[in-house]
Length: 342
Length: 286
Image 1 (cartoon, helix red, strand yellow):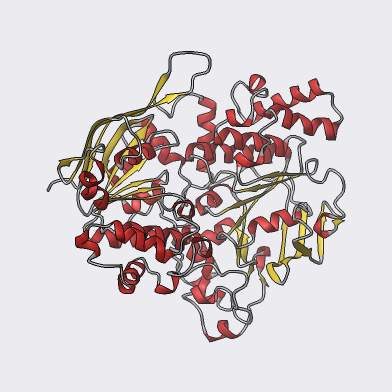
Image 2 (cartoon, rainbow over the protein chains, first blue to last red):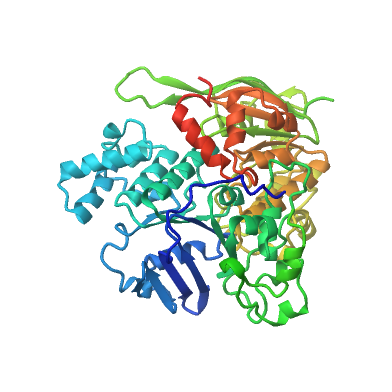
């Protein structure tokens, strides 16, 4: 089921210059547990990258580590480099320039109901950003807040700024979070499962909205999701994470049509596809490993893998860099790539 | 063939908290809903938040009082006011599985205690005399693809998919003929969702009837025989699942299908959303 090359045209990025964000060998440890291991990727302006994987694979930790949001008492963040727009930033949030969060990057948290302050009006929470970062007065900031709510298509925005979070539905709260994340026109938007709790019609609207903002603000977008349907519809590139490591990365069509990692294949085969109701939905057997599991010295996916060979049990696959800056971490990827996807 | 479960003209309203006004407004959560499910069949119910699909299941099992209409189990009307003895058959025969398995299992109790309590409440013919033995509990776990090592652990020690299996094991303790599922896989990863759907397919092959509520049309396309589309407490479309998905009659059903993210027509989802936004009206029926 390969789409013709003409279909799926998306508004192109305005330029294909150096990456906006460059992460090399990001590692997150909690005590002796290694939760994110050697993650490297680039994000380009005007493009959408999807970070995909099961719960506990380290997707959210990766995002929070980049933004310096992990508590230093619990997590140790390290790596060889973290560069934003060519400027090197330190790991762990110690050396982030003032305004990195908010001015340069926007972050949409996973749970809209707990990310807003219940004691403050929604307009007040958005206005605070303009007051702190832009030095605006309260009235001017509130006016900007209303403009932002209007931008994310909250109906009757100039009145809704005086409402409290509990007066908003889940979808509307999610819009408020997106408004806050893009209020200061950041260069990078990180959205952690921004549509998981929403109805499908609202989900489509929110994804279209994020995509419009990507074009208007020339933002780089990192969207964390476990829904390959969402990935296929709105991402340019995909990163697949398993047990704290990137196991595959590349162009969306490459990943969905000719995935090179058995885990990627497994995720796609387990989707109940509305367009192919006769195809059996094939689960990935077993459970994602716990971080303390003793698979060191073997491939972390090997207990669940249908392609495994003896080597997978005795050796750890390394990340291989392929053409088109695709990556894969599997000994048998050529054999997997040659097989049918679905 | 007679229906395993059928409801007729079910109507239920929540009093809305109206600020200022003295007169309470009743929000109709269920508005004359009628449907039925046969043994060994899966009836899928789809709709957005607030459509009344969860309220429907909760009303059927008796968690909402003050409804009107008739609920029949194996052809006999169910009287939710009948008390423990009068409802014994219904309570054993109709079991419910919830979206959040972590929240529906008691965190203080071991799996052994939870399953033993469920068995103890099952009718005598199912549980047998005396205390539930190790093999009874082991058989329940085996049925959902888990083993007896789970018995002395507590819910916090399991993943989401494992917890949902345990919740299903508890529901199976009374050997129900009807299983009501409220978004049972929505909190799970897709890889694990597929495992649970396989388990439901096995249970259905044993002749159990399912009412399966979800907002995920892809899941219903794969598991449901018949489909009911709900909107604002009303059934607006019903028919064989594949037929409804392939050629929906209602504009609202079409909108739900169009908004489901699919692995084809790349970019279509966003473009349709933009078009809908531009035309502002349309999509949902008034």
